[in-house]
Length: 171
Image (cartoon, rainbow, N blue to C red; front, side, top):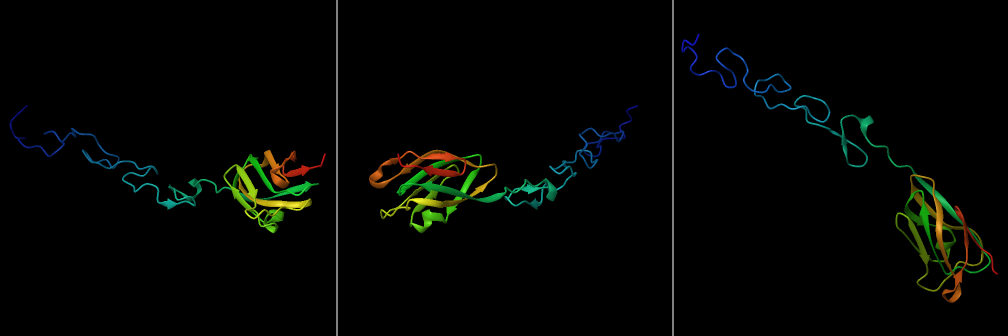
């Protein structure tokens, strides 16, 4: 019966003490607590910083760090090499250094999938064999493709690729 004894019920409750609003995760009638990304009620969310700058709830939730390897690119050429370019498939290139290219003073530039080597001064890699350059790569199983070799005067050397080895035999 309505006996007018309940003029001003407590906020979010009716006169019978029943909650008239949504109950939050903490059980508060009309509360604003939410479950965070880590599954905690009214939590602060992920707080562990991972190697890549992202945040996780637990250290084991961080993404795996990419494996970085160094790969020697070998060459065997009957002619002097004045420039080279090739694609790297199956891995991301993060750098190149050393080898006969460095010995010859070449500038070796890389993107994630292309390596380009040449000289600003006209120097060359002498005919022979050895390590052309050493690549730093992340992930995967790298192999070369799309080889372009340049000889004296910008002539094209019709080289061949066998995964990580480059060869040129004079005709």
